[in-house]
Image (cartoon, rainbow, N blue to C red):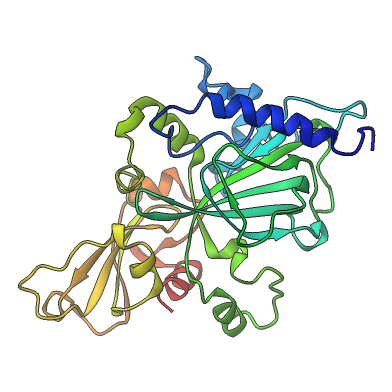
Length: 343
């Protein structure tokens, strides 16, 4: 280590003090940048100054969505470039909590995940339970444990390039992988054991398969444009619809955790027999619509009601639906998503 003990955290404290002075009297925007790199707000959009691409690819491969392998591979967050390095060329950027929240998970064994050292924090924003994730960290602040509370802009880690992938992350590509997520099911570990008994699950409910990603870039840009008028629920429900699915279940964790996305049942409806789920390309139920038995045709427990072909073409990487012999149907991946969502 080139630094004296504690010197990195002195840098962190200075960065935090600067960031806190920028917070408005009203508490600031719902989400803040997880590092001092704010090039996303530059007039030209930041591009290569903000995003770290995959090897040999343009910077867009470091953005969110179907941006890799010709649109067929999903990238679930933003890869944000470092701004400062030590004498060996290693990144030293402080990683900052994007919003007030509570630490729920800290992985300090990089060999257990292609995210390397990573941290997950739970937030409440506009009535939604949001989980921010910070990956490839050099180190997580030692005192942070599940249950620790943090403030927006508070230093939580140091940027790094840890991962368990064979090719690793080079010094030149050092970055923080930053995600904003919704959680599918707090019974994920049991579901995973039943459906994938031969697969390891080293992270319990904090396994990445239990998260559905939001676009942090879209959120940061929209909240800057709208200021105090920004609302996360409104933003989420404005996302393009991929498909609609009918499930014959009336009580599952998503309905309680994300009640803000559930439409109230009409007062005349005697009983809810199922829910029509409006999914975006990530599989997020951006609207849950109660349905009475009289509104449900057929007996199948899961029915694909409609597909938006244009959105499927624009964002094919999650592969939740497919067309066979002129008919749309849920893929096995889509069926697994519905199973996990409603189990």
